[in-house]
Amino acid sequence: MNQPRVIDGREMEPPEPMEATLEALDTLPPGEELTLLLNCQPHPLYQVLRRNGYTWTEAWDEAGTNVIRIRAA
Amino acid sequence: MSASLSFDQAPPISVPLRFFLTAPLFLIAAGLALLFTGGDALGSRWHPHTLGLTHLLVAGFMLQAMTGALFQFVPVVTGGNVQRPKRMAGVIHSALTLGAVLLVAGFFTMNPDLFVAAAFFLGTGLILFLLVVGMALVRAEALGHTLHALRGAVFSLLPTTALGIALALALGGRAAIDPSRLLEAHQAWGLAGWTLLLLAGVSWSVVPMFQITPAYPRLLTRYFAPCLLGALGLLSAGVLVGIPLLVVVGEMALLAAAAAFAASTLVVQARRKRKTSDSTLLLFRGAMVCLLAFCAMGALGAMLPSLAEMPGPPVVMGLLLILGVFVSVICGMLYKIVPFLVWLHLQDRPAESETPPHMNKMIPPLRSRWQMQLHFLSLALLLPAPWFPLLARAGGLCLALSAGLLLWNLMAALAIYRRFKSRNPAGAPHRES
Image (cartoon, rainbow over all chains, first blue to last red; front, side):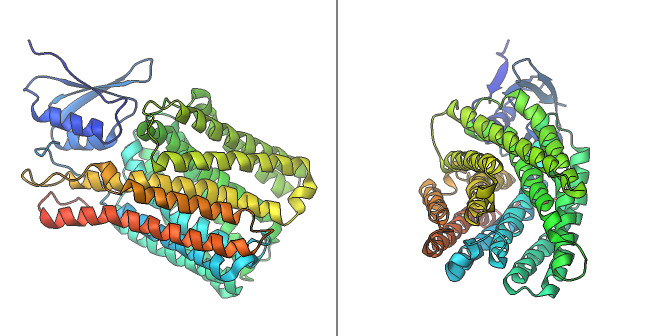
């Protein structure tokens, strides 16, 4: 079984989290999920995901981290 | 970086850039005005040249940068889309630019017709801006206190505009109003409600994001906007019904809120996780020190009214707040926003095309540091100028040079965008125009 793919962008300076996420999506096997950890809502990334047929969910934990799970629709 | 995904960034890059590239022209004009008029513009806050200079900064430089930033910031941070951004930005930009030029010309010539024309163009531009950005903010998807602060700031633009139009019509001889009663409220809504609240709301997001700091204290982000708007309400009520105590209480609450914001910014910056110091961080830090100095002088002026009645201290306070806080922070933000925009819009390129440079390399760091040093040198020269008028010319020259360098730095990022687009012309067309 493949390792879960997680990008921790909480200590990255924009646009590094978006660069890393889009690179990872290029090689994401069908049916798998990419998790992105951020301290904000990345609306520019959401625009790109929406336009390219990805879906995502958001869940905020108690530490204020936005756990974003992305997969192909 | 992915080359297989398509990008559809709204708004088009020309929407914010037209504002960002016009703003430094007003700052250059402010420097030249100081250079040629000398100490007149800093002798007293009520001198027409002082008011002309002030409006070159607030209705010229700051308003251009802030409207441009909101056209970009609202979709990026809140997810709210401005309808027909290119067309609306074109009309709003033209009206605000022309209105600011007419207003400043009015102050320098005291020609009543120029004030009336300025009221028409600035009023039209700002009402359109309030409609399109206000609607986007109402529809925004984002959560949290940044959105509340942005809504409060845009709301505050309404009384600022209404009072400003009334004052311009009074100066143009078309309204029988005593300007002295409205000035206090116009200044307070413009500088605290519209500008400081926008700065704070943007900072809640941008400082932790770009400077890798911890989040601002929740107490501050939750209560800053309601406290500021409540204080403005008290101050306005005091002005309207003529109760000086309400005005003083409102002013003290504004100063306390501003000092809390400045101190918190310095604390979160000191606890940043990457200990590098770029121009943006240093401009922000200098701005927050100026804001604390402004608050201290404001509190001192309330305790010693004779100090506030002297011509020099209010001018120093104005320089600290407008040039020291707002112009500094806007320069710092532009050094992040413009390269980010260029980077974002260059992602929409063919798969085989070359990779654009790293965002932090688009404006040479050494050049942004020179600009920052010239900017702070101009402030250091201008602060004592009410007592040493010769310094006004030297400060004006430094300000004009610093603003010219700011424009050159922003153009460097734009040149990269143009070069890449001309070499790699393919890409999905933007929706809407």
